[in-house]
Length: 72
Image (cartoon, rainbow, N blue to C red):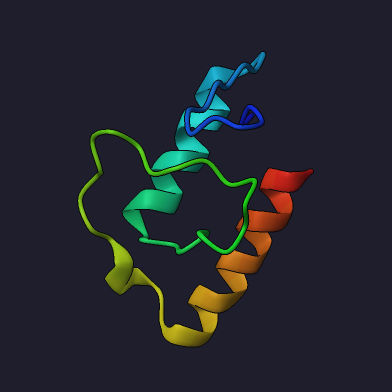
């Protein structure tokens, strides 16, 4: 969650592995979720670039689905 008036983030979840995996996949695929103000920033240690695994149309759909999942 992003605290009002702050640039820092604090995440708290019951299943940390799922969160770690979701953020890893987002960052490895280089999914641009910057338009979503609720999306957390990239991980500190950015994983290897796997963006070549998605074509343009698929990438757009994955970004939409990832953002929808994150907000839920």
